[in-house]
Image (cartoon, rainbow, N blue to C red):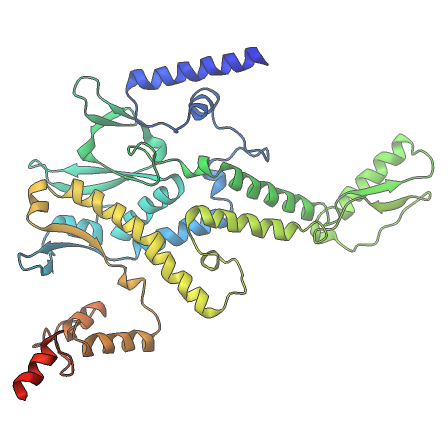
Length: 417
């Protein structure tokens, strides 16, 4: 055992030396991960399941979480703005970079396709990549998604000290790769969620496999056939074949079974309900939803929460989960699609999460009414949120006549007396 530990430490040291010498920034994080991922390959979870991105998406809760977040982000409007010296802002529409995200990042896909694909990679793998194609004047003209498996390495050049991305063996400078990353301990590469949540996802796959086997075997697991003496080889083979052909599978339940020579069937296991199998699967689904920060009802997990609590969870999903993704997107878009000079001039990208916070028509209009009466929203402010065109004289703000600045009421009374 001592020699095995020493050998493992030596292997970890060797793997780390390779990464350090290459200056790589694409690393799994821990020394044990260096060993398992670089030398031994993907390690199976404690449940015995080897978890990959492909079979993880076969888990309904994982698929639902990735799908919910990706669709929400893809349907959230993102626009290019310019802030004025007076603090006002205006949308910049006559710019190819704004059109890339809204309509056509490249001639082959739409803006929705691009945002959804990138966010799906980000949600599942905590990393998403896209190539930024530039024209002869170094201006971004196309965005092309890159699958995570096509990223060979992220390495700091030992001569120039600048970061380079290696895509299918070809090097790219950092400014030509849009890299979105989630939780990270280095700041350069996100922790792979499939590997981080390996145990939770592996157990969910194991439970799903167990459920499939349960139904495949006629929903009667662990049946033992008891015979008063001993069956001959011919009788044994004939009985086994008959049971498999006539009674194996859920579609063959409740068929008539004839037992010969005093043979008796004994149930050797608990039923599905007795073993609390369904509860285990639900608990595992909740555990996976926690990894993604998605409320249970968003992925079809039933609960007895009152409607008010569900609405509160919807708001928390937007403010806690989607808002963080929006900030991540905005900072990377501002950094690589805009020049430093343009940022200094007030240009910036912004996601509008108001579209995700729209509630019932009555509640929304009541909120608009209060905002209008108390003077912090104009008619055109409200119309813009409802995707309506502004109207003439619609930028006027009301001021309640019964409101007065602090301290001025006493002065007004003194002057009147």
